[in-house]
Amino acid sequence: MNGGRENLFKAISSDTRLSILEHLSEGDMHISGLAREIGISVPVAAKHVKILEKADLIERKKFGNTHMIGIKLNNIYSFLDHFAENRRLEVEQGTTLLDALKSVAAVEVKKMGNRVKVISTDGEEGFYIYEVDGKFSDKTVDEYEFYDDAVVEWKKLVPVTKKRLLVSIRR
Image (tube, rainbow, N blue to C red; front, side):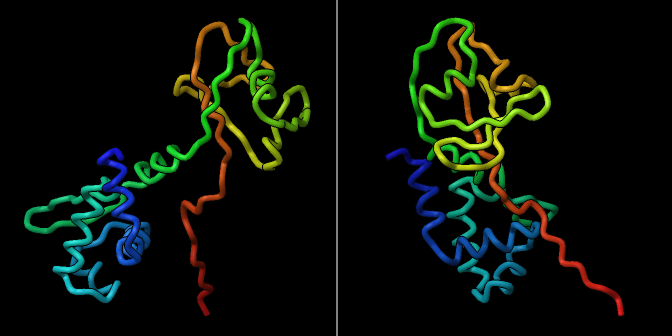
């Protein structure tokens, strides 16, 4: 098994480390404040932080003698990409992305004005976007045509809470 993945799985295998990640998702924290919030000692928190750092899920920012710990959300998102299904296919030049996609998945589309939107892939309804060779395209799936070999990342937008607003009314 890849050493990086091994570190990652070790890092997320602990409820304490998952709790640390949850707390850091609200913002950077000093290690002593983090330990206090979670209810563990500073040395124990430091041990868990080192494991999370080794897995590249958090980073330490130094301000003089003060160390602030912050989450690396992009690395967490990238980790999830490892679980995407990979499919190989061969198409003729000029084949549209929609036709290529239909050859490997059940696709439901909806015409919205003069644009075609994919509303379901393999029975999973949702909002979908795609990248070709790591770049977003401004073309719809029925407009994008293949003239060279490419890697397409078909992405379902999932509702991941980016910010949670806790609104209180002044009384």
